[in-house]
Length: 484
RNA sequence: GGCCUUGUAGUCAAGCGGUCAAGACGUCGCCCUCUCACGGCGAAGGCCCGGGUUCGAUUCCCGGCAAGGUCACCA
Image (tube, rainbow, N blue to C red; front, side, top):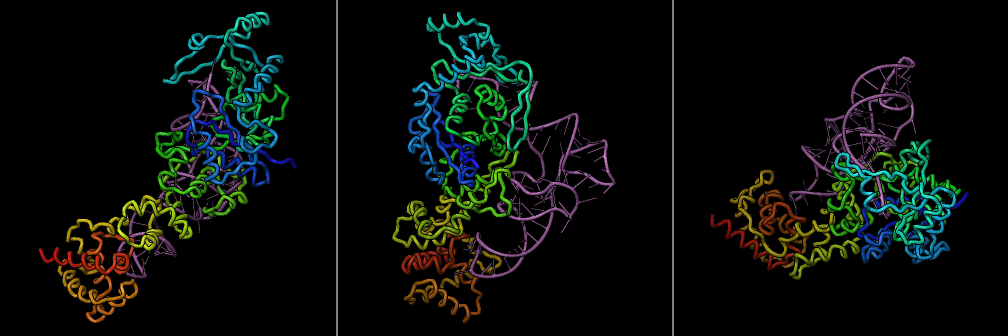
């Protein structure tokens, strides 16, 4: 069987949109599942939109997500160059466009922007235009004349107005449209660069791409691609259009949502593996009901026939859950490395950050959650004494005061301030007084943290705080409670 | 507006003529527990509507409706 070749063909315009990431991922998985090749091609045919540094972002994202390409600008596989502006400079696209002109499948167009503008109509607030084939009627001589005069031109595809065109998508099946629907799209722009539509077809063919994986927003332009392949006499690749990813309002994910790009998500404290895993399940499902997959496992599992056709909402809540799963399963050293900046952001005192990191590991979903859990270590927050009320612990400010008064001398004598030793001491005290553990621990923990919830129990907190600071806080609490 | 696509709980999503209609997130309850979280157990919640075909439709067909996509010298 022929080796599968897929490609990821981003245009360097900024951060990587999660829709594009998902498309790249599926392209990668489809190829790798069958031991094929995954190619990276940079589509920089729009000099206006090009953003500096965007190519680096692409490399960086692919590296972080693990989608390593077999061929690309930095890895020649014999199909180069892999950057379209370089290919354009070699005259590749114009050469092929001219072939089409020869065959009558394309034609020169000299229409001015003004004339094109006049062709537009507005429907429901949307500008719509279909070219009227005005320049198709130009004679060969007129064209030559115009070219000689140096008139700006574009080359357009010449689509028939009658008949129908059918194309096949692996997921959506056969789709047939009337040729009248097919616009004479521009192939070569007046600046000499090819349009995306044209460059894509030419390069996919020249690079031997067997499976074209793309977003389903291209579904309606697909028939025009087919006509191009047929005009050239090239074999049409296998098309796989992926369902759209939408925001919570079921609209195409846009930059405004704040989490539309991979980099946005990383900035927000998500880890690459979780994002990749989550995004893989947006529009695809494995045979089993497993949900946590590493990239390697996805490669093994991925059957593109199981890609769904309906659009999927990008649910941040579930992504967060999944991120939390990854954090919990992560080995401690890596977790600590990731958590350290967030810990240091709030804690400047010489506490054992590793112990704190460990407390927080099973309690957060994204890294920035850490801050809200641990700020009390650094500085005792203000709190209301009503916090000493706890129904289930049978604790009140009064009982708390008495427990604290009992316990402070015991703790003052305590030498070993480790969690286990402290717990032993307090348990013994509880047994003597026939107090339940919670009845003792609730006031202590409150006095130490001023928080209803903490990422650890009272004794664990004391271990981190140390004897001096713990007693200081406990005494302050007694004072606070006595004042009432 | 034309064309294309989609339509199973709030969300992701199995299903491919006969199922008590999987599973996950979220929500709620219980258990565990020095609080919370983790973990465990459980609950509520769904096949867009109308016609067919069929002994039987979530599943097949037709028609509605709804949503999204697309109609650039952007990709």
